[in-house]
Amino acid sequence: MYDADQRDHHAEAVVEDFFATHRAPALVLQRFYPPAAFPKVRSRLGGLPQLPDGLQWPVGGSYGTQAPMHFLAQIDCAELPRVDPDMPAQGMLFFFAMNDEEQIWDTDEPQQRVRVLYAPEVAADQPVRALPEGMRPILDEGPSEYAHRTPAWLLPEEEGPRVHVQWPLVARRMDTWPDYLELPPGEEDRAYYDVYASRLSEVRLGAAVAATGLFPRADAALHWEQTGSPSWSFPTQWLRYQTDFPQVGIIVDRLARVIGNERRAGKRGQADYADVRAWVEKAAAIGWDDVPDDATREAFREWIIGQISDDFEGLTMTDLRMGLAFTKGWLAAVAYAAGSPAAAARIPAQMYRDLADEHLPFAESMRTLPDGRRRCAETRVHQMLGHVPRLHDVVPDVAGEGGEVCLLQLACDPAIYLEFGDCGQATFWLSREDLRNRRFDRVVGVVESH
Image (cartoon, rainbow, N blue to C red; front, top):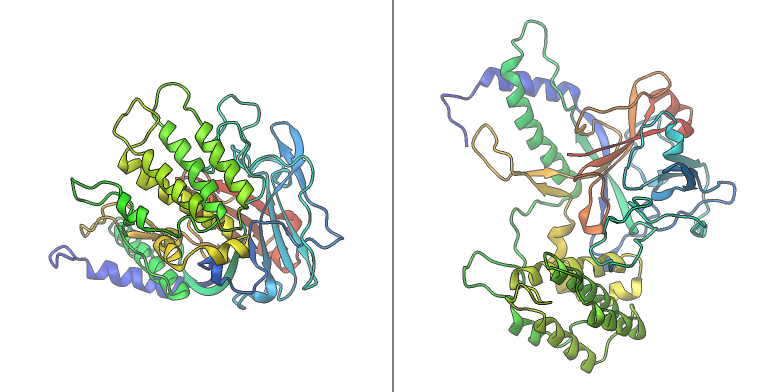
């Protein structure tokens, strides 16, 4: 890994001293997996908020008009390890934002784009608040002929969801370090930056592994996706042997939709969705949470196999594209199951195991490090407090004394369609003074993108 003639031991010692003196505790918000074994916590991403009666659903500005903000997360402060004495020990934090396509949150009037509400007490049986009228689809582009098509299962004429995928969060203590090295007086600065950047990536990865107990799986392969063999084809015989597949109606719905969109990709003209819509209607008749009969299962498996062809002009798809469609469709079914205990119980354990790597809080990096390594894993965690990654060193001005505090940073989480720019992140900032005084009405948000 290292060339002894090129290794700078003095620079490494300076960097390690900096790590030792600038380490700060933080909280990683672990998205537990799979949905069939969720912990009993109130902290979560998405869904609908348990807003007490005294709090109003925030309204903000988007494309020149007012509309309800999208709900992103609620954090039960009683569930958080005590790493910062200024954080509330009780109560609930609710995070909202105008999550339209622009995602420009750090405007002159930040409260028109993001809002954080705090309830000192929230009853254990507090019901969720119903979605208000006028809510726009997530990542809505406003008036446009070219709608942003996400998630992958949306059919062309459909509007996107207005509620983010609901998923519980468990907070763990995690060590963090700043993005940038501050050198002691008299040191040459240029020689240390590459050493620091490389080492920072490693220690952040190690800290996330230690906090979550999860490990990166570089290039983990799914057996229905293309392998390295030049003679590979989609495993149709394997699919025919899965006599209990599809196990639940939501798999029929999501997989049919994704296949319809994937076979249309790159084709001239408008693809015919008649068969796809027939399966969507069939799934609705079965019930998304219910079990299809054996005849329906067999017919659906044969329909999938019949979509595979090398006829690039026809309404079919290649083996490679079918493998990718399977992954997208199954991920979409699991995302739905996160909010449906009945569906979650009917999805088989093997399917959860197959897709587990897609839910890891790590991302593959194509960077080449100074020591020659490639494709290193990088962290992609949801976090509160401590030092957080700053993709462009963007920290909006926050009112109050004591410096800025990261109240929450949400990472891009593609398995549940949580998107911020191009694989970016969303961060909610406030001052130390405002955190101490519970002035969450002064939080400022910013979205950074790679």
